[in-house]
Length: 547
Ligand code: NAD
Ligand code: MLT
Image: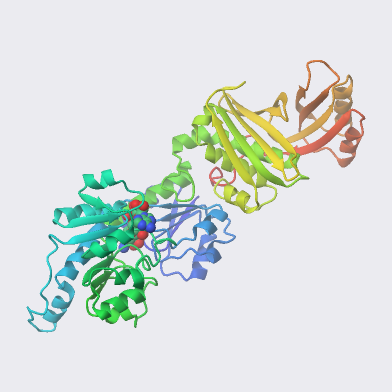
């Protein structure tokens, strides 16, 4: 039964979904050390985390059972994505559930900064009544700069427009037309926004590009007295530079919900400054947001573990349960072609694989089929390779994967062709198709047309098409106790005597002696035993679900 570990808590409604889903066993463990998380992961199929649990390479490396990580929230920066992908683990998040709550928190901080709410409240608690000291500023008529106009940034901007602020925004993936619809003035770059704004709020992810986006130099170009809010990720605004700018009075106030290190050190400079308002990463901490992300996280993980449905994944393409069942045979075909070609070209390291999708398959999610092909290609060389990590594994080994699609059907209504090229330029190719709703078939091998099963033990031999050879091979295998289940023959020319290829599906592996006896026949020019999974076997990764 799939087990789901929850390490940072989950809303009651989310937990109930897990408990009510037949076949899922939730395991709630709070306050684990990194070592305990690593140990606990070894016994579960999925994990739901918020931001406290850090899934580092050291924790993820070598995990064999866990197949999915769901982040109940937006930011996946506490999960090492390359490490998860390398281990073949899907990572999903719940991007929309806490948008409004976080936007409201940013606005709350902006209002609180403007009206000195926190120090005024603290003074009242201390028995004081100081009205002059806490005189504030009005938001209406002021200019707010919003960097990052995604879900949260846009929600903040729209609300600020209603508060009669002038909103100037920057986001490289937002169009000026769309901005105008919302009453936002879009600028071309951050620099253009910097000198104009009275308030700044950032809503980007933390990336190499956004880290220290506001450093000392940029802060110094902002208006004197500017108020700055960060409810996105610590480090987008350089903490030291911000502290200095507040201290010098250049920045009039700062409100931060997120920090480079969480929690920040007890003696962190920003904790000590007046005009700095800090909250402990509370953006998404509302009943509504937690219920929403908890429910979504529970639904995502059960949909995946029960129906192989991939939604909101950040390291692979999304795929619905229906699509997954439609794609199953294609993925199987891609995987088997990969395994076949890896074995046929074994002596030469593969440098490039070209995948061509023709006919019906061209309308499917071919990237996943390419992933399945790559998983097959590397299956005998790399431990734990699956659909999720195969492309990355191929890339790391210098194998280029090239995909082309054509909706025009060729000889078959649907066909997947793969050619692998080795460093010395040698090529081996194979094409497969689907027969009905159940069968994958090999229909071309290195230009030879044939019709072969693509499963189990396959004896592939190249030969000259002369009388008596099939009889010789059949007799030799029979003499060594090997039963032939099926035979497919492809020949170069319509007339006998030319180069041909044959594939025998056999019920047991021939001995070395039997193979030597076949190989020494003067008309046999090549002989190879290929081992594929039996028909219907589960694919590694998303297809291999525990019962
Ligand atoms: P989103 O993906 O919807 O939006 C991010 C936007 O940033 C995108 O539109 C993107 O184009 C833009 N962007 C990326 N790089 C940029 C750059 N260099 N300059 C300008 N814009 C850039 O994400 P979201 O859901 O709006 O979340 C935004 C941030 O808020 C994330 O970092 C998320 O982790 C954080 N967050 C914090 C809390 C909290 O509790 N404080 C809660 C939720 C989300
Ligand atoms: C997020 O990225 O969603 C936030 O950090 C909210 C959280 O999980 O606390």
